[in-house]
Length: 258
Image 1 (cartoon, rainbow, N blue to C red):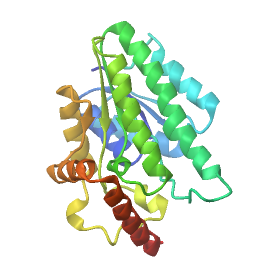
Image 2: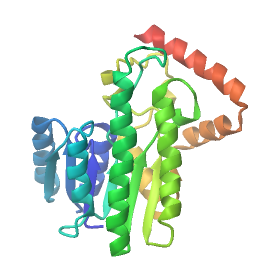
Image 3: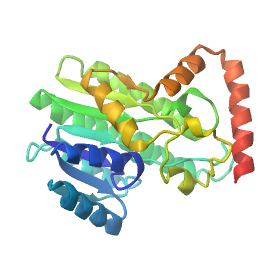
Image 4: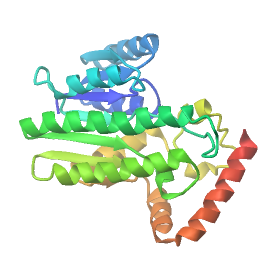
């Protein structure tokens, strides 16, 4: 793989993907909304790994920005071989709130942009007969806590559906479903994580390594670590009523951490 485009590539899981590909000598296209942070991340990767790093300042809540990134994904000039559909944030607003602005932003960045960019990447890669697409979801898709859970459930189903439509084209689509990962994601969301047992936390670099191994093996879903694969299997097999009660318990604990 010669070039990877990563949305949200300056922090957390996105930055871990950037390091992993740069370490393999893969050129990068980093997409993020903070220009200063984007330049800093690109400079660090160039110095450390000696790879080519292209940057795109884009707020994926803006549809014009989505269009620019989609065009970059679909172009045949300096084509993108790997697309990491990673940009996202926590949506903790109540489903009963009258103001649905946080939900609208979540839909734009984690549903519409995922759909728009995934389609563009799929078309471009299909024409060349090869490519990898990784859509970053979450194990939270298996519970029913809030709109973030609902959005990530959509991401998982969408990713597998895109994989079905691209079957036989040489393009592999994988949904990455991580558990709790030690990144700034939770800090930004105001989640302290003090009630989460230490054994359940994952390291971002190890998570990415396991994900890329699953992608190379052609797996449609990647759930890094044995413990989270076990948790996911239990959640899938558990009656939905029990899952709802468990979700309510988790939500209550999170509200105490605010």
